[in-house]
Amino acid sequence: MAVATGRMQMRSEWETPRTKITHVLGGDNFKIRHLIGYESREFKLAAEQAKEAEKKSQL
Image (cartoon, rainbow, N blue to C red; front, side):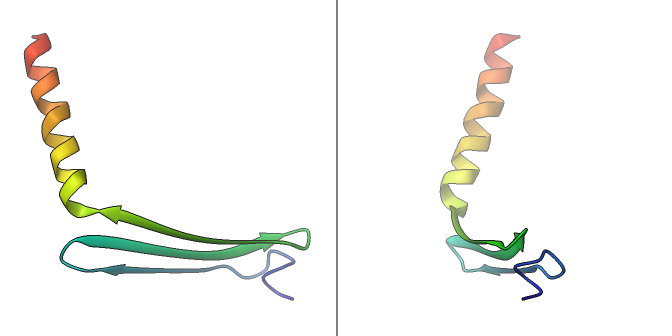
């Protein structure tokens, strides 16, 4: 009931060598949200490096 009415929210994060996992449980006005996200640590690093290379090439 506390989650559904917005009085309580839960968030957890785990990291493995290759993945960051995020779990969120929350709600408001009797609508509950349950989200799970996966983020590749390898692809994130590659994307950041590509963005930096693009910035340098625009100079």
